[in-house]
Amino acid sequence: MPVIWSLLAGVIFGAGLMISDMVNPARVLAFLDVAGSWDATLMFVMAGGLAVTIVGYGLVLRRAAPLACERFDLPTKRRIDLPLVGGSALFGIGWGLAGICPGPAFTALPTLEPKVLLFVGAMLIGMIFANLWRSGPAKQEQPPVKTSPELA
Image (cartoon, helix red, strand yellow):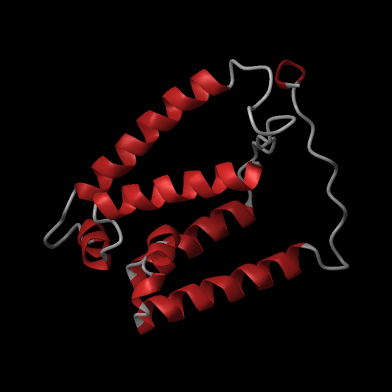
């Protein structure tokens, strides 16, 4: 059941990207071009997503448990560290250089556009290397994720 819910959420997210034209790299690059012909559309899409998320989290976290799982899987790490900042910077640089974000890249895969295929391939390779680096033998085992008592 969780896979079906995840697929449904992904389809809704992809539809939102298509409707808002955020799968168009030119629109994303125009947002990043603050010194040129700036397009604020992406800012409004992100603000809309943030508003829905804030309301959604407020409603969902009032429940004792999620509908499709045993417990909530919420991040417990609150510290801002080098991997977080470095990963964010790498994400932003890649987005700015390619003009493609991972979500729209996946929705654009059926176009078989070489730029999209290259981006998704590079992103998947990067994800594999990141997982290998994090789970390398020199890394210490991470403690299990604990949920707060009110969410259990």
